[in-house]
Image 1: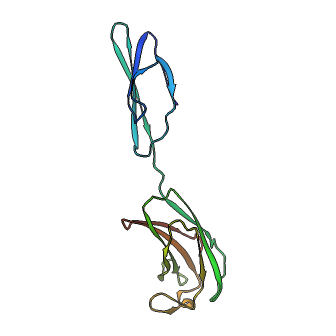
Image 2: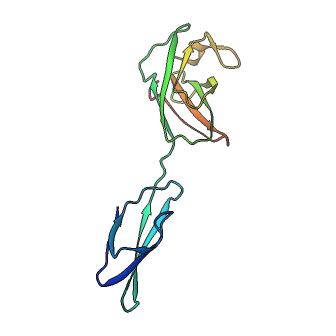
Image 3: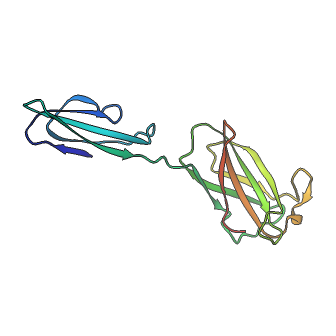
Length: 178
């Protein structure tokens, strides 16, 4: 809420801000509820009050609106699972602040071979619908385009998820344990 009060004024007006704020006539004291507008990152709201002698005084306030970044969090697996070849498991995730131009979701598997650097990255699926929040995966005996045995990736894995928008931009998350 944006509030103002003026002593000795006969009229006030407002300018700046965004649609709905600018008015040629405002009460000399009042308030207005300001809702965020994601089209603007910063807005300056100005109130100008004039006394009976025609002298005007203005006051302004800048309102900063931060746009949240898209995010994704894998909820399963979440660490400590032991998945075996032939078993089916759901990979699940939650997401927030997704852009409207999402094209697809890609899920992959990263093997670490006991080290801290990835030994390989393998796509599980790259054609998941943007609104989907789970994927049922049957653990294959081989993975990747070369058909390597899944056991060759080592015993430490991370599942990752990437959202791809129509411009090719990617963002995502991986499960926090291996």
